[in-house]
Amino acid sequence: MTQETLLLGQVLTFQADPFTAPIAEAAHVERTGGVLLRDGRIVATGPADSLRATAPMAPVHDYGDALILPGFVDAHAHYPQTGIIASWGKRLIDWLNGYTFPAEMAFGDAAHANDIAGRYLDLVLDHGTTSICSYCTIHPSSVEAYFTAAATRGMAVAGGLTAMDRNAPDGLRDTAQTAYDNSAALIAAWHGKGRATYAITPRFTPTSTPEQLEALGALWQANPECLMQTHLSEQEDEVAWVQTLEPWARDYLDTYERYGLLGPGALFGHAIWLTARERARLAETGSALVHCPTSNTFIGSGLFDMAARRADGIAVGLATDTGGGSSFSMLRTMAAAYEIGQLRGTALHPGQLLWLATTGSAQVMRMADRIGTLAPGSDADLTVLNLASTPAIAQRAARADAFWEAVFPTIMMGDDRAVEAVWVGGKPLRGAAA
Ligand code: GUN
Ligand code: ZN
Image (cartoon, protein in one colour):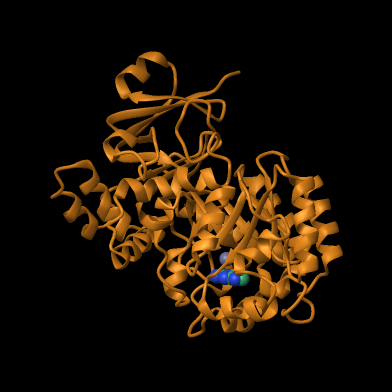
């Protein structure tokens, strides 16, 4: 039996990339609009009246003037770092050694991994995020826990075993061979199962030997439909360390390029300190970057230049980088991207920020035909935002006389209180309708 549902509210859709098309052409807002869902997919968006006429029998969820948009897509996170988010006082390498690696050590215990995976996904759903690309740990149990918890909630997620075979403590290192074998087994078990996508995940060059990068490059070549995610040029100290570890390399990117780890479906987190050669190669190969603004300020990494990277012709997604990032919220993440843009001399438009947090992230994950969009035929993953969720936001939004001016206070000041409802695969997981 077909199951139809009609959601009513203000509806935001994107027709084009707002970094290459004017915002008025790229985005469309239906002020008295709706989204018609059928059997877990989006059938249509449009004016409320015409959708009511199309589906007169469909149950209606009327969200008034709340904003209906695609569920947020977080293109880079570390779910095992949920418990150490907001840990004080260290920069990248000391932060990894002091907080991150001790926390990740515990994920060999399946019960612990299950507990944190479920907690993490519930937290992101509270914040309106419906898809994530997450790192796990070196333990296959951490990957099993993540994909199982996502399947229980019906979420489309990507992720993979985080390979590390050097510069990590005892108990948190694998080898080139075990990383290959375990990742291959997890691909066979999970990639394409339900809504799961596997991401081959060498953590970064400082913790992966050339042998391990080579093995995972071969694995990606054998499984090109998988994603590949890693870190690149996050802090200047890290870039200098890579130079001493791999003196043969022309630059940091070269340590990945040599082993076939560039191309469509490759996601490089951070990428703040790039050379001209690296920028050109990223663009030529169709590799993507993921901007993690709350992390970049929290760990003191630097100011990513979004406008310049897009002008270079490089695709960029947006992400929390939990728990180097200081928030589970893509609203807070958009606010931080705006602030970094200002420090770089570009005021990102609210429509560009919302596009990055939905379609932009879905594109770099090669999933934009299914998520991060309200296009007919895509999966019914939606977030509904109350644009007056606190007195402070409400009094500002009340003064707005244009749509974007009414949305921007929620981007800058909103949190999980702004998330009125969340739908995943056509089912209400959060909000009054749940
Ligand atoms: N570089 C290598 N691993 C990590 C990590 O877990 N978080 C961040 N922010 N950077 C990294
Ligand atoms: Zn990261």
